Image 1 (cartoon, rainbow, N blue to C red):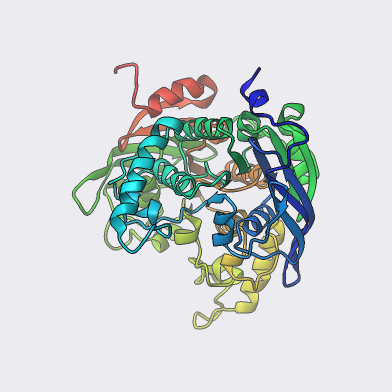
Image 2 (spheres, rainbow, N blue to C red):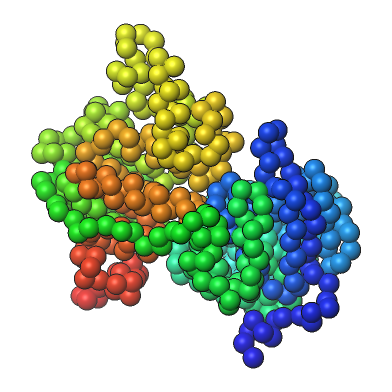
Length: 520
C-alpha cells in the first residue's frame, strides 16, 4: 500500500470537516456562494483557485475570523458553531496564515504558549511547552531551538513555530494558507515531509495554494474554486495540472512561457563592484558585477537571503552602495544625491519590489493614488506643475486595471481591500506601462494564482521583445528557467556562476545555489 492508501479512512466514517451551503458577502461582493465541501479525516485536501476566488474567505469562516451569512459547519459529523478563532481552536482547528502571526521579539517558547497559558504563573506553561517541543521534534521533524528569538529565525523555521503553536493547542485539523510563498525549494520539501507525517498520524490537513506542482505532490484530494463557487472536487491521482488550471480559470492555460529566442542589443545596465554593508558592518552584497542588454532577461537565482534583495534595492534607488552603475552608458549615483528612486525613474528604470505591501503600495490609499506613486510629476498627471490632475489619474488607472485584469476593477477601492495577487497587478500595471528601458523586478508572481502568473510572465516577455532590458529576481527556479535568457546565481552576497538558460538545468543551478561550484 502507498502512504496515501494507508491514511485513507473507511467510507462510512464521518468527514473531519463538512461545510454545507456556506455563503458570505462583503457589501455587493459575494465572496462565497452556497459552498459545500467534505474533507475526509486523515487526508491532505488541497484547495486551489484564482486570487479572489474565495478560498481564504472560506477558510477564515472555518477558523472563526468571519461569520457566514448562511450555511452550516460540521466537525467530525457534529454541527459546530464557530463564532471566533477561540471556538475554532476549541474544535481542534489550527491555522497557519500566509503572513505569520508571531511576536518577533519573543522566543519560540513564549510564542507557543502565548494565549494558551495554564495559569497566572508562566513557568509551568513554558516547561510544558519545552517538553512538548522536544517530543514533536522527534515525531514530525519540527526541531527548532525553543529559546531562539523569532526575528532571528529564517522564515522556514518561523513556519515550524506556527505549526507547533497549533499542535500545542491539540489541533487535529490544520489549515495552511499559501505555506510555501516565502520558502526556498528545500524548505518547501521539508514542509511536505512534515505534512505527510502529520497526515499519517491521523491529522487532517487543508492546503491552500496556487502552485499546482505542490497539489500534485502532496495532496490526496483537491477542490477547485472559481468566482466564489466550488466548481469541482477530485482525487489528485485522477487529475492533471492542465485540467486543474482550466477548472480554476475557465479556459486553457499555458503552464510554460511562449517566447522566441532573445535578440540582445546594446548594454543597458552595467553594474560594477557593487557592495552593500548593513548597519552592523556586515557585507550583504559583495563586489557584484553584471550586465543586462537591451532585449534580454537576466534572471538572478538563489536561496532567499543571499544578497538578491540588496541588489534589487540598490538598482531601484532604495538603498546605497559602493561601486558603479551605468545606465545606457551614463554613470548614475550609487549613494547620496541622485541615487534615489526618483532619479532612477528619470533614467528609464522601472522597479517592482519584492514586498508589494511595504515597498510597492500604501495600503490605506486608493488604487488610483497608488497607480500614480513615483510618477506624480508625469506631464499627463501634472499639467500646470502645481496641482495633480486626479481625473486623468483615475482615467489612466481604470484603463490599466482593465488591461491588467485587476479584480475588482474599482479605482476607488483602497489597496488593502484587494487580494494579494491583485495588489501585485496594481504595482505591475504602474511600472510596466511607462515604457521602461530597464525593468528591475523582484518575485513578480509571489502569492499569485495560475491565470495571473501566465499573464504576468507574458507581459515580462513582451517588455523584453519591445526592447527593454529586464533583471528578474525570483526564488522560484521554474520561473527563472522559464523566463530568463541568462541566469546568474547568487550565494553569500556574490554572483558565483552564470549560465545560458538553454544550456543548464535545475540540478546544476541547485548546486550553485548551495554554493557548490566546479572549483569547490
